Length: 301
Ligand SMILES: [Zn+2]
Image (cartoon, rainbow, N blue to C red; front, side, top):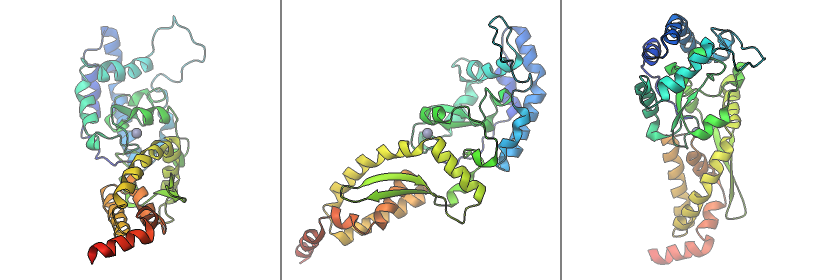
């Protein structure tokens, strides 16, 4: 997860701009009539998210209209909830919509253009942290919209946390999570090693946050996202380290681990290099063992 400063956009202003030219006029009027509710809900969202308690907003689900009837009737007129959900797609994402400027601002905040949920994919969409189908009041709330890749957006689906531990990490509010090292890689012999990634929060991490880290990692299927990245990285690394004697190879791995941990402590790269640097056999194997040491000594002499 890549932490990101909260957007400075005003939730009410964003909403009112998005709906300002909604058609027909009766839909616009209906949307204007719930502006107070949308603004109050956005304030409640910010307060809950600051405390890591978005799961406590269950009372705002399917508001303001209430949960739809299970009977589907195509002739049924659209409800205000339907119009609120459509506000995101038609009045914020649409290229020519009034709200597109806010969509662009939120998306452009992605660090290096990367997904804030996995830190790997390209951020080419906004993810609703609380899904708009369940929470139409938050359909265009800036705090609820984070830059994400399509894979994370799809994997996260419309799941709604019932308890605190089921909340995925929120890039705007869970900024403390990267004060801990919680992503680890395991490298297994024989050479070339197989690499797997795991969420293993340290015992010093608060229990609820640790549970959320594990939930974030599993629900977004980050092991599947990170695993394929490691193979080409290792092949390139193997070629580079072959030119070094084992002590120099080991030192290089430690430096890479340290530098990536400073850059992004819970990135797959940081986890991979920490695991390789801690491995007793990898540097020795990749750099050719005693032959490489002898080559190095001869070159020095
Ligand atoms: Zn992603």
